[in-house]
Image (cartoon, rainbow, N blue to C red; front, side, top):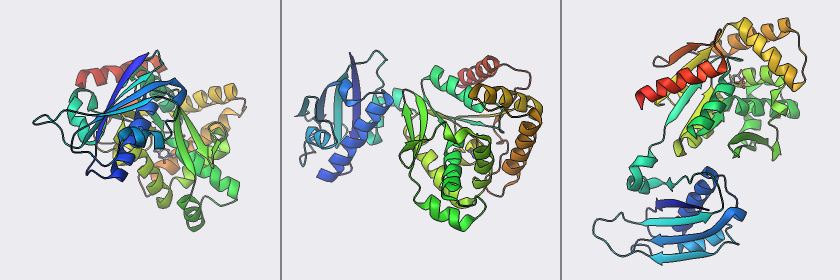
Length: 335
Ligand code: DC
């Protein structure tokens, strides 16, 4: 069993603020600790004396925590204590180390664990970004977001609805209310479109090419970048993509640009495809990679380019472990 600490603040003592803040805090604690309701043993809340309008435990019940015992109590009034603060202790069945969560003004209570770090990993198709970032995410115990999967899901939506990825007006209507969700289940990213897990369906060569085209459209980028920034604002993470260091997170703590020669990338992609059951000729893969590079590098909005402050890694003659080790060393040097 583990004990997870959480705390947040409200701007004022209103029932709605308390409901929203408790819901957000519990959602984060559950997500960061990979828990579901069945793993929870109990939730114990305290709040500062300037909060009277609602019980945090009642807010938790309303947020869907029906089965576990809940408890709320008032903290003593202490000079200099943080104002309008709600604290919780969650006991849960888990063998993983507890990740404590401090949100909003409560971050000030635990500056040691509230510093989030953001790592930008950009580069062209087939450079090994996804593989490297998944390993780094696991090693550093931080979330790893494959932003390409989001553009792929937009492309899949267009293909399914019969909308050309070059027709910006029609794509804009489609993207405006796209039901796209990125979930992290057991540390693995799953991409959902219209409520369906499309994580595999978006990996075909056809969708790769359509994703490159649709990602050039301003309406698509605006929507995807907003979601990516929202995810990165809440937790430490590594984002892999094309424009993370230059556009999505220009203030990222660490920026890397991973590349390799088109020939090496095509060979790697051929191996990957074979393992997934697509047998495409090397020449076709190489041609697609070069075409995607051109599209991604030459589009008007947020093209693929090396951020001024990024560290360039040419992995043409490096193994995955060597790339991961190199990045880990660079991070260690700076932390
Ligand atoms: O990384 P990937 O191959 O899954 O990405 C698919 C396409 O999405 C890629 O060709 C360009 C686009 N993309 C982008 O424009 N910006 C990102 N941050 C990530 C991907």
